[in-house]
Length: 353
Image (cartoon, rainbow, N blue to C red):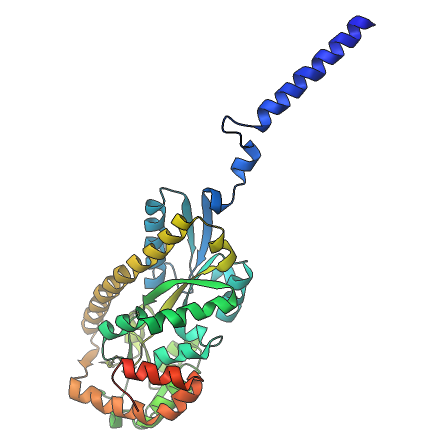
């Protein structure tokens, strides 16, 4: 009996020692703790990043380059998986912003004009002919005004890592070349269902027709509408050259991308990891700008090869459209809902009322 008791005690002692050795490592941390460490202690983290456009679209290509840069800069401690085409949020951008704030989305790249539904000041970015060129647009995004605007998403439990640019928007139609506002008179032009577009083009005499973009090709083919406006890459991607004769490089409106991450998930990262994400976002801003410029040049060449007549507004021609936009400033100010901010942004671009 005594021998049996001794054997039992020996087994218990051995099991106890084994349990202790498996629960701690040489550095005193539990193995379970190592596999479940938070970002603050240096854990390798993986984020899902969602984009609204297809895999080959500019924003999705930029997002994949961003993921590559982040992984390299972090020595693999941050991995980003890109999910294009709005698949993670069912294609509903308003839902995407809410999901990002709630944490069911890790990261999201979405246009500034869509963030205007949550913070009206974002509407200012897309005021027609607010920016003279891409250089001025980028300067604004990287200014204190741009930074203050980006930080406003914090009230949605989102941390704004930075901005990327989008191509300016251009006009296409099947009637005639557009060289002055009067050339748009009577043209049935599809625009997004947004007062910025409606008010501006109404001022040119165009007949504005809000419509989902998915319906545009058929409407152009059936001649229900005469034209539309979008970045040039959208024109080629949607093969609108099959149903449009003229493209005007009007550069009439800007739009940007907000690169956002859930605030709590950002806060859980180490300071070094946070800085890596911020720096990578800035780096990709320039990368994306260069990429889009090359893509736009290729798109214009493709359009010409397809027989589309392309004309670019000259400076004096563009100024006529600027004057149309200025007449709508009272309406635009109402959309921005912040008179002080509206005044500051006009002063920044040299177009004070």
